[in-house]
Length: 478
Image (cartoon, rainbow, N blue to C red; front, side, top):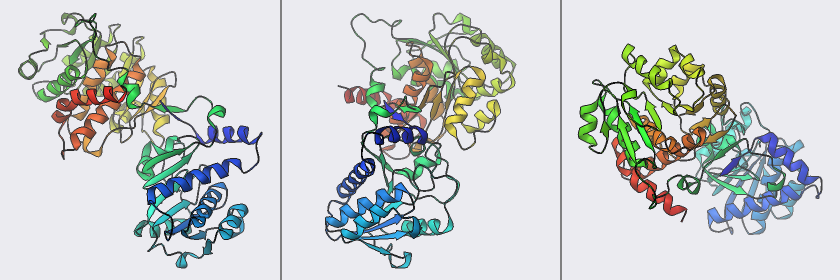
């Protein structure tokens, strides 16, 4: 797992390390890691044109010291100081001794730069950038240089990913000591580019992370192949209540995703039986109430099933059981009118809303997606999988996951039905609800990335690529 640490947690760890070390040790380590990463991205140093955008404080100091290292290797380094009176003195001295120059914005050469280092604002920044900084960001963006952020892109809230105004659109972010949540969630994810984590010696001083991301190896552990002792019941039995005469495809997609993920058996008890039976003859299709379906270890309820009285009756029946349940789509619409159906449950319940569905159940998401997911989970004592560019999962105990996989091509009809089916399959194996949701989001995102390699995808492509995705994930852990 990859830990995500708040700005306050990182600062506290830094202070603990500095209590027993020389004052500049962390900055020197950060600058060395930053310069090394930049050299790796550029492939050379001699003659490379580097522009440093330097704010006051330690973030600007990191940029200046890294610039000094690049200048010592033969790069042509120019620094633009947004607040000359408060520029980091030691960093400024090092840059000048190495042959770097301090220039005004007009002489910086942003239109010819090979590399632009953003050291305007670090993890302590909040609110929109000041006009002068915003103008520099716009000019850097218009130029040809590789855009690299120092620790966190300026204008991005390190904890929430909020971008209240102008923000540096990094192609790469070199972050120090720990990954900050704002780099992987909310609008900040889109401004951070590729992340590079530099170890500056904080590991032993950091507390439990604020949130975590699963890796491929973490997910592979939940997708192991069956062994000689397994049978169809030991692999997880999923019950699906999805689809209708109006939306039969939702039932087909959700059921297919459950089948293709890993369960030994899928039972379909919805009202699109003919379509599901034709698409997936491996499924056991039952008519009547959910209670007539037979043995089930987790239910998926909602995609395309409608919101009429019959659908509400089915939802009530499923939520009255002591089985884990995934609520998606229409089930969330019904829940928004009957919140007590989940609030009174003791069995695991996972809600999978997008932002508009979340708002109907819990109120507006706002700019802090981590806080929103936690708020919803605590409100109903459930697990919330808040869909988005970076899906966030939180449970009532505060455990939080941020998904790191996916592609914008997933923004198409039916992909949520596929996610619900995947989640049901993982949940049926007995994995704790929040972890099951995080595993499902990761697998869904990887399937989307694989499907998108061939161009625009449709939801059915995800179902078809799931076996290959599972195989690749399992191979990554071998």
